[in-house]
Length: 351
Image 1: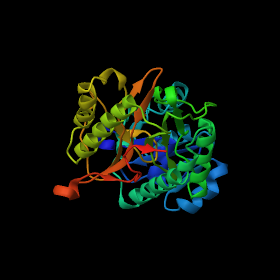
Image 2: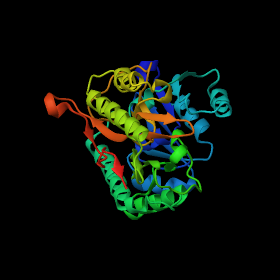
Image 3: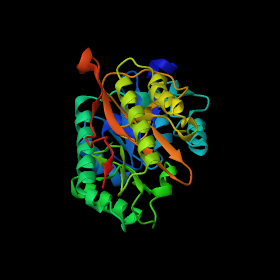
Image 4: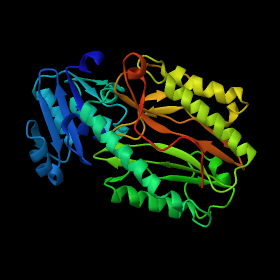
């Protein structure tokens, strides 16, 4: 990380990256990491006890003005090229850090080099992610009987989030999406007062967060009789998702994974009705690298969790999206196939 930008120390200020590197969960923390082994974790008095207990192998600095104090520590240790998280620091915070370093050190942007450390997960991370996905699948299954006429989008969303917590989630991974009938044409519809009706397609995008790791799953179900157009777009999206999942192998280009799903939808005549990327990485953030989309660069690696989530959205009419959280694996044959951590059937559920 440091060598990639020619720095001899790095100031880590993103909360999720501080957590990843030190284990400290805090709303106010920063971390100084140097190529000579110097490591100083900064936080304020509210989190000092937690840091002492959970990060005992790292020097602790208890201050309010963390970023400037850590820069001064770096300067006192002789570091003269210091990387900073330009994707996190605001203009005003950067100005304060630059003032502290002025004339003594060069500040260089780290870009996404710290974020990229989180892409490949270790065994313990994958276990936590699998548990988050298991809770998600169990909660969704247990509430299928509430996908019935008369229940509102918001009522179902609240019940689903409550059930995930009851099953052991620390919180929902994100605000649950429940989009029924014509609302299904809005990919990130906010659940409202509309009540489910016979003939609706209902898209539910949900996930549990477990010990910091985020699950992400989407299913579209039918309430009552299914119209021909509904079956058609569901079939197309299901086939596109299956192709995307099959293409998600170690070494595959992220744009190629997007392309196989997108091309099928376009060839069926619905290309203009699928406008978002086919997927993204998941971990300590619900959306993180790698990004699976047209024009994106990079290749998938072993032990990288991703989503595959194509959709078709017909304005004023409805829509379908199917999404799973997968883990990319390396190997020959079946051993190299992506493993789905979300386990609800991808067949159309007619309730």
